[in-house]
Length: 465
Image (cartoon, one colour):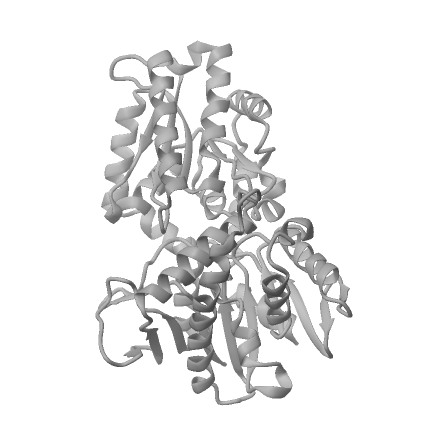
């Protein structure tokens, strides 16, 4: 099989380490694993701090028959494509975060040509790489590249097979309809030019099919896909796997041991309630802190028995909303500590690990947790939930029913309704009184060990046939 993969996210190469980053999961590590196994081409955007040159594409040939094609695009075009359309419209749309009284606004029409231009650059590069061989598989990823399938054409007009994977949630038709009709319908018709479209869970797949049925006259939808304009597109569920081998390597690294020792000191003999998130709007940190405050209001003595360890990492591209969110979290934590903490023994700690050991800190915290809270408002999947189940030795996992991971993990977690602060507080209190039986933890680990990158790719390819 010959792979051609596309992602706006760009990997790095390091001699002796291979394609980076190497984390326990997510899009870039998954693509790195697949290309490491099969070889092929990776088309991505040159990072903003990358070298600039005259050639529009920097081509780097790597060991293992892997070639990186990093597109050099005008900075203003990249900013409009990524920030104005990718983040401020599409990312917020799929997480139900648009201020619909004002958004989408006129800025979308101004930025849309740049979005088209970036997608065209990707499609042109992919077209130049496609040979039409029977085993060629083109994998386009995420909302940054919605128009690439359309630009590659349907099966009768192009060479090779094309799949698209959506790592974000997909919103329900009523909310998707806030997009201008021309953009709304173009996104849908473009994705239906692919041979397969994949999602992390059934809920997102059904929402996508619901949008196709609602907005595309003549589109025939069933539980397995959609037929539109004479072309059949299969829709599949293929959640990202946890890279168990990478988790085990991280668990054994000296930096992880150092973080474990530091966290044990900070806990001071108390049990640990843990969360680990990027400071993104949908991760729902404020309601998690509010639920803990409600719990302490009812039983202040819990602050002497428990320590809330919140590991926080910065978002990929900060906005004024994420900066406000960080400030709100810090003010809330300060208030909680003033009310319920003691000198040298904070009730809650907001921990910002250094970039080099972020993953080590997360692994250390999750492996020490007596209870873990993962409560996003909506999330495409949420890898932390899988990490927590695999690493946790003692405590239960409270998981939002709106995380894509919930579908596959429901039998191993306690459900949380993320918008209900008091219900979350009650769930926390109940979970504090019980542990997780070793047999339950072993069953969860078996489930996670049975998922890998090959299984994920097979789901995508089998759905296409």
